[in-house]
Image (cartoon, rainbow, N blue to C red; front, side, top):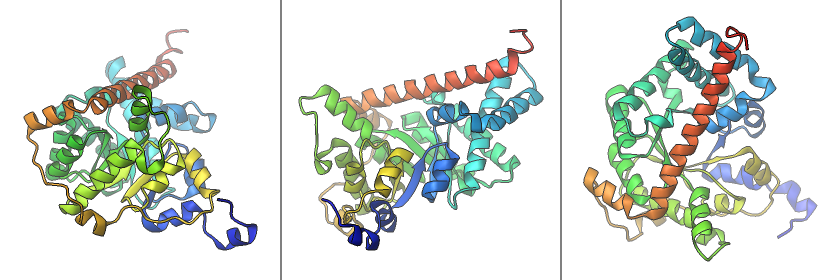
Length: 337
């Protein structure tokens, strides 16, 4: 539906309308995009940091991380790991200068099945932020939504007051377990769910309201609100603006710069699709999941099993690429290469 130029001057863009109903978060490590779209929060992941770290504008941060890793010393592996953690925190600290809210920083996906390893790495990241003068109230630690990740989140929240963002969430079982663990926020992935159904089914296009990813997040939102869970639902991984519009009213939505740009140029009336009132009237039943029940229910969802494992592998692969890049910067000169 086109809008006349006169009406457009009076009407807010879809992005501005969305901000009245939902907290808009920028899914990027690019400071320019954050400056342009003025989100409340920002999210990063290994893939986004890898992309940003290769941009000329951010080489000073990479150099600082390399210097930090070398200063701490230790084995080559330890120096690279310390430089990598420092780089994540340097990006997070710069992002926090540009937003009023919180930044999400991700724990290495290779620890996804290591509860204690995730707890230790999360605490290390929080310590690095503290060294930079940033309190833990402005940080969300991202953990994979495996059983071990969810239990790590439970400990971090309850024992250390560290806020967690549970990522790579595809199944209703993952969402229920996260709510029961009392984590601060979950990131159910919309677009990657759609990708799976398009790749594995006969149907190749979906209306936004019928989009499997949209339906998944809607069910999770309704369940949380019906049963009074405080965990924030933040839809993530969008493929088009239709998915975003169909989730208007969701607590938070984290959106890429490309889709933020499209939303800022769209001028149609936006109507909230999710609400606490409607959620409380839905017919979902409350369930409890211990480890055995969680593993069974999650395993019954083929899409979620495949996308969780695929997501962990992809984030791990980008973490390895980032480490290789840092290794080259740290050690190639002294090796005479």
